[in-house]
Image (tube, rainbow, N blue to C red; front, top):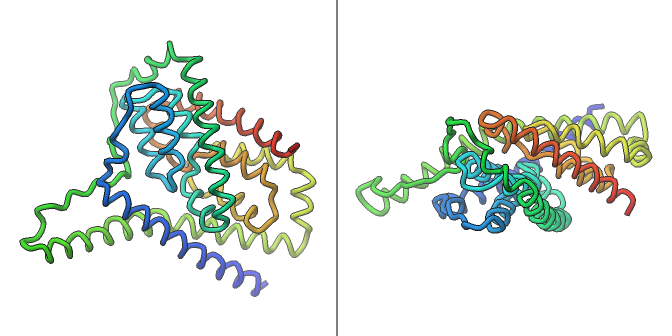
Length: 294
């Protein structure tokens, strides 16, 4: 029992350290570009879909929040929103890149292609009614967690200004955003999953049971994917990384879930959230069972 707890704790710590490193690198990229990457938008419908699919595959929550912000401000259509939500995997994408980078990149490429195709078809089918997707006058913060840093003018000299920007980055971006906001949930869920898997594996052949009930696991993965929050989906990522879960189950959950990118969408437009989740769930079930058969 003690060994199981210690093994789970050691693996959790190592995973979290890698995740913090990757998230910090992403923050550096976002800060150096001053968020401009998310503010350029093509005027065409196909361009919107492609752009939002690109935002979706970006690791972490930044691209997801940007896509939702563009949609709630009528800058992109519903098809573009669907494309972003299909392509995104929230903070779990960073965990995937940490645990199995090669397979993760291949899956993200496939999700990007799927997102573009489904987004364009969705826009074509409901294009005439899409313009009414936001009758609500409420607006939410354009940036959500997209940190645009304009630190010019701070400090009298170059050295002092650089020191100020460095302190700002570590306090606001690394400490407040990466560590305080994301690390606790990632650590708790990862440790809980590893501990639960370790305990269950000592009593039953969990891997054999899962692979013998893949269809049921696909449906469970899609249902869990309905939760608009990063955390619960770590279960499927961790179990797949340990070789206990078939790819079909991970694929279904990844398509169904979208981290916590949808939280502001729920507050702003519940109808769009419900339609998008319904479409993604049907797609996730179909993709999961096709992958299981293949």
